[in-house]
Structure formats: structure tokens, C-alpha cells
Image (cartoon, rainbow, N blue to C red; front, side):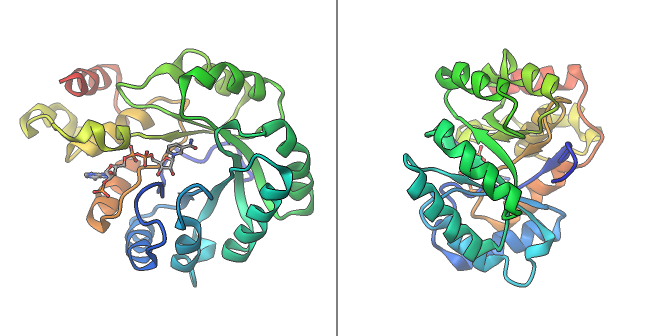
Length: 258
Ligand SMILES: NC(=O)c1ccc[n+]([C@@H]2O[C@H](COP(=O)([O-])OP(=O)(O)OC[C@H]3O[C@@H](n4cnc5c(N)ncnc54)[C@H](OP(=O)(O)O)[C@@H]3O)[C@@H](O)[C@H]2O)c1
């Protein structure tokens, strides 16, 4: 995390997948790490996911960068969240202000925590394009060191302002919802349609979507979530070159529109 670029790589998201289920977490985290995943993303919002992730990382904590979040209206609550995270993870390499909640209040004490070495970088996230104006203002202040936004062929609003600003500022970009929270997988295209993507190492539709996002050179990391170890292995395999060119990306966009 000390250098600017994280990737392009595939990480692992944890929203709505294993929650407090430490057994599923151990399986999915194990499968991901075995396939080379080295970043995991969580949040106090994810119903016990941080605790089960912490347990799943026992004995292999050093293998990953932990990206998690502060999701708290008040500084006191935020500090209590960090105290829990330090128990689970020892250190947080990327601490993100979740959905910009009270970001002006959280920045100063988080900077103190960074100074003390308990957290690495400070980042910020938002899922909703209607908040991207505020997100851009927050980034322009120059105090955030990473940004997380949704990006997939049907959710591209971040391309207008957030990605160009991140590139200008040299900020790592983390992509949430690369599979549209599963909505883009409901009616996958027939396998024959993916034929032109096979030379790029794409074996299935989720991999096509993950590679589509990683092939934007401003993107560092995609963090698909899954509670299925086989899915985790397949997703991790999308994190290696060759990357898609403009023609292949347009094909994925057309297939996503159905
Ligand atoms: N505001 C924020 O900061 C924010 C907001 C949203 C998300 N995030 C982060 O971004 C991460 C990713 O976003 P997301 O969880 O909303 O959505 P996502 O990763 O786009 O999609 C997750 C869904 O895709 C399915 N899936 C994953 N891999 C698959 C595969 N290979 N084959 C078939 N199905 C597959 C999963 O089901 P299975 O379990 O069946 O595989 C799950 O239902 C989150 O987990 C979270 O860490 C952050």
C-alpha cells in the first residue's frame, strides 16, 4: 500500500456474502488467497463480516492488505470501530470513510492514526452518483489517498469526473459492484458470444465483467464479493493480463445491455 498502484488486481469484497459466518469466510478467503488475491475490503456496515474476516485471516494476516471503513456519524463511534478493527486485524492498511459519512469530522483523527502507524492510507467511498459532486470536492482537498466507486458496463457515472480527477491526483481507484451486485449475472450471454474474449483469458461472463473494469487503465482494483469458493477462484483468475482493448470492451458493453 505504500506505493500508488495496487494493481490492476482482483480483490475480495465482503458485503452481503459471509456476514458473521466464519466458516464461509474461511473457505472463501482461503480460495481467494490461494489464487493470488491480496486485498480484502470490508466495513462495519457488513453485519459481522469484519469479525469473520479477522478470524479467516488467522495465521495468514500478512498475506493481505486489509481495506475496511469507518461508517459512523460521530468521531467517538468511528474511534470505537477502529478499536474493533485493530483487535481483528492488528493494523488497517487502507481505512476508508464509508459513503462520505461525516468525512470532515473523521479526517483529522484518522490522520492522527496514520501518523501513529495504526492505519496506512486513508480513502473514501460512495456508491451513489448523486453524491459524486461531494466526492469530487472531498478528493480535491488532497487529503484522501484512495477512492472507491461503482463501475461496470451499466454503471459508468464515475467516468465523468471521479476517474479523471483520481488519475490527475494519482489516486488508486477501487471498483465496487463490478458485477452489478449480481444483477449483471442473471441473464449471462451465451458462451459462444464470449469467443472473441478467450484469447484474453476470459472463460466466463463474470470474468468478462471483471476484466472489462480492470482494463480501464485508471482502475487499480476490483473487489467482487462471493460466498462461493469456486466463484472466488474464477474471479481471482480475471486479475491477470492481457487486458481488453477498446473493441473487446465494447463487446462486453453490448452483451451487458442484452
Ligand atoms: N459504499 C460502499 O463503500 C460500497 C458499496 C457497495 C459495495 N462495496 C464493496 O464492493 C464489494 C463488491 O460489490 P457488491 O458486493 O455490491 O457486488 P458484486 O461484487 O458486483 O456482486 C456480488 C454478487 O455477485 C455474485 N458473484 C460473484 N462472483 C460470481 C461468479 N464468479 N459467478 C456467479 N456469481 C458471482 C455473488 O453471488 P455468490 O455469492 O453466489 O457468488 C454476489 O451475489 C462489496 O462486497 C463491498 O466490499 C462498497
